[in-house]
Image 1 (cartoon, one colour):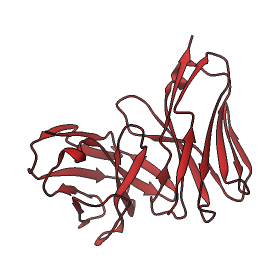
Image 2 (cartoon, rainbow over the protein chains, first blue to last red; image 1 turned 90 degrees about the vertical axis):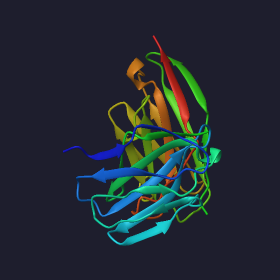
Image 3 (cartoon, rainbow over the protein chains, first blue to last red; image 1 turned 30 degrees about the horizontal axis):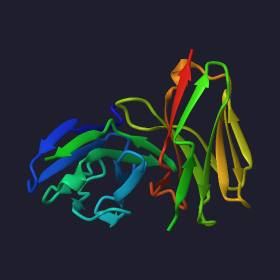
Image 4 (cartoon, helix red, strand yellow; image 1 turned 135 degrees about the horizontal axis):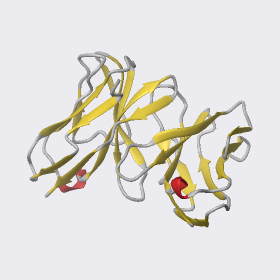
Length: 110
Length: 112
């Protein structure tokens, strides 16, 4: 039982490049979320999903896309990376009210 | 929308002393208040939570109190130990969809 697995752990992108952050959970949870963590700002919700095929925007969705084709996977896509997207990204899988976070992806956009 | 403020941003305590972190929230509809602990290089992990129909909850050395009227809640850690050193986040939520509004975090350092 791996919980929530995020890949990659580290990534450096050039401005304008696109990439997908992967998130997979093996707990059969319906709810999943993506957060970004920036110094002094806590965690901010990017997108969330309440089940396969259903996604919605969070607090800071601009520049990011998500899809949820299966219960297990919830990838986050950066369409055209910008330096402002330099951050640590956390995926969470939610059971009832408890969020189980992955180890995070540290993304640097240069 | 909901806004959560957390204080202090850093907290240094001597081992064995108590630590208190305070959070305030803005939306009276929020009904669930978790606290997460984040160790270096790891994702946040739930340590304790409280719902709006309860005023206080305790789990060994940690406790959380909630004042709905004043819209604030606090985390209390007693008999602190070096392994309590971490970043602590409070959060508020109105649903079970994983939509949390987090505070900015408190870096707790426990010195021997």
